[in-house]
Image (cartoon, rainbow, N blue to C red; front, side, top):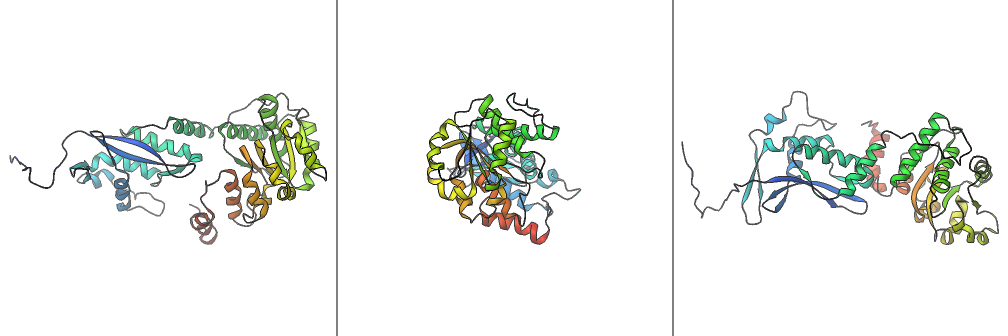
Length: 364
């Protein structure tokens, strides 16, 4: 039956109004963004994300980031009251039970709040989970749309084979073409890593036919191959996509033929010539940039691996039956070209992925 009165001279003041949660997005470097949880208190936004991270850090998580069987998060937080401070010093009390859903949502993604654009699908999971807990999404509709498109890639659409393709694709090749086209439609690079002899060439020609002959893209595509495969690509292109306007840049007169690049559908060059011709060749913008036998750039310190980063293209594709031959840095090198920054820099990739996997056998 006690009634407590707090004198105005008391230095600690508690907020007694209503506050609402919201999910926010903030840029976090090129092609990266951070998702956070904020508390809106009469128009003042308080960042609650660090509080959620502190709670997660206090939990008895196992090595896989999971709570032990029988642990009751609700009981753990039932008597917890956390305080956020307004600019005027007023403290906003937040009961721990109000944060249970948010803690569970962040736990689901192991506390990750920073995402690459290519991970927008995972970010969407967090947004939807937080929304289900009462934190409405603020801004960034294009990110949500991107996340939905990326999630849809989990079910590869059965795309119609281009009428201009003179080939009957096997079922797995139709899947490969559908996947390449879905990536292309969303502007993301990828690795087609079918084994040798399973038709990576015809799947790629199907995509090129779709882009150039069906959809009439406004710029050529670039294909980089080992010198020994030039004639094979010329033969396969004439056989399966005879309407593609092909330009092969090889031989002593190749510089004269560069004036025809803009009027071509597919420009073929070789890895050795990239080092010699990059200054002229890369002044053009391409639709697709395709590396065949892409393990040729597995050494990120090589000249050609550095040169190809200057290619300007809407989409980058790597074709290789051996994306990893010796170590995981080779995979990093491919993705550092396909989706720059997606796997972090070389040093962080080694510490977070290569060393734990190769030296400790980490399969998590």
